[in-house]
Figure (cartoon, rainbow, N blue to C red):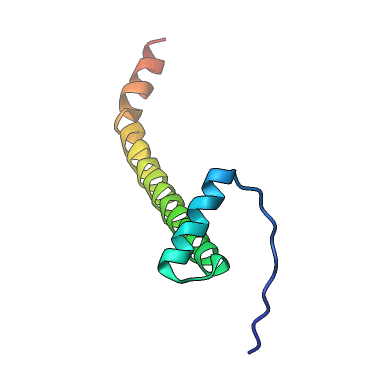
Length: 82
């Protein structure tokens, strides 16, 4: 399978660009390689956080339903007295 590269242009603050340049020179890697690696890590980390949040909300939904069902009897009894 042939891999195609896409080009993206971004604007960076001068100081950030200089730090990237210096890091790449010290690490002997291409700037595009660094940016690819950093973006992949960022996206993976963000997706993991989103998945954890989805799981947490789903678990809380179940807990909330259990809590609500605990009070069904009280609610029904209060309506009977009204």
